[in-house]
Image (tube, rainbow, N blue to C red; front, side, top):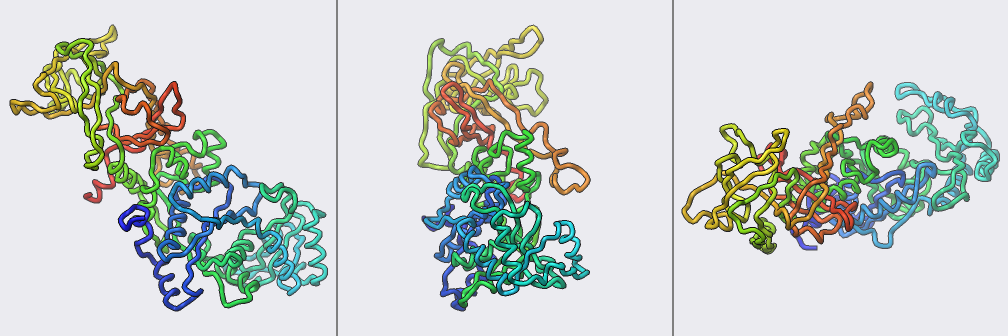
Length: 565
């Protein structure tokens, strides 16, 4: 990995978490070792917010020559699936990160977690509560009023051990009883008021099958897994800040050395015009508002990948927005700017016509196919050139012609001359219409002395149009995507369902598009810039009969304009 590569950029910038790590290394804590983890729950596909966490966890370890574990928090079998496990691993790898041989699951520790729970019971620090959930909740109190102790709190150790073993054996129905840690019902931190650490769930687990019918809560499993794996820095989002005392309390009961993991919180990513809740994203999928988790309108990593986003663009976006302790909302235009910035550098240029209007060049030889030189990428001197076929009949964009143009319309109109990209100057002489008065064809003449788009007599034209040969082309379907929501914060309206803000125009499908022949062998996810139109990539729906393109982003960059870039 070179010092100037995108992969390196994500790990060289300093943030407050890196400052903490540097201070601890200087103090000799944990022998100078940095060991992080990324612990997703496999109950849905990862989204752009998870991408920020992935970059932060793996990037922090890379910066300090440490290592990162991938650990699945699979403690809720009713919502988890191997499909999600596989997708998460694919996403992490695609972003450019590797966990080596350090793939773990919370379920790897179910026996150890059960033994630890028994240890807490035997030490008088946990008890079985058979009150119903509503009663337990009401006894929690409020942030300003202490909770009430459960009548089950003073059961004997022997009774609690017996009940817990019977819970494990499946003698009780779901909801009949739970195991709670005995901490402090008067604590100002609600999470310390005898939290539930085990519940009964009679659902098969995607890894352990029917072995267990009791499962640990996240707060109970997470810190212990960190401890057993030797994690030094447990980096999580800000909503877990109030959970930290409980995290530390469990680790303190478990540890028998000076080592202990440290939980550090950062602000989660929120984007305008975007929903980040996995529950709401799942709702969009299940209710068919979108075409699956990888729909290019979704903020999922798989959706962004299918739309044409690159790993480097997402890593650079994550680096650019920084890491803070303050919640905020990032303008989605910055994410769009990041992919434009990367694709401008690497994307192959081609010409494509999405709304075709036929042009016949009447003085061009019939049957002739002329190969013209075209630049592959002006941002990359080493990208070279390609040949583009030019013929008597071509397509241009319908929007590039007006029969009665306004004063500052510089494109094609009757009697006006324009440049065809890489080709010739042409002049419109005749307009052909159908029986409804719609323009269906233009008759033009060309100046053979202007090959390559330059005039030997020095005359200038104000417009250069892209085009595609009518006979030498690839027909394509093009899907134009817009933002999925019309409101900047669609899930912040308490009395309005977020789905009310879905954008009815978020997808338009054009099935009569023509692209130059260069793309005929393109593979799924290959990226292109269609000159003057935007960035597009090949959709996986492409097959031998049809090539399908997704619009990744338009050429106009509002973020760069605002920032004066």
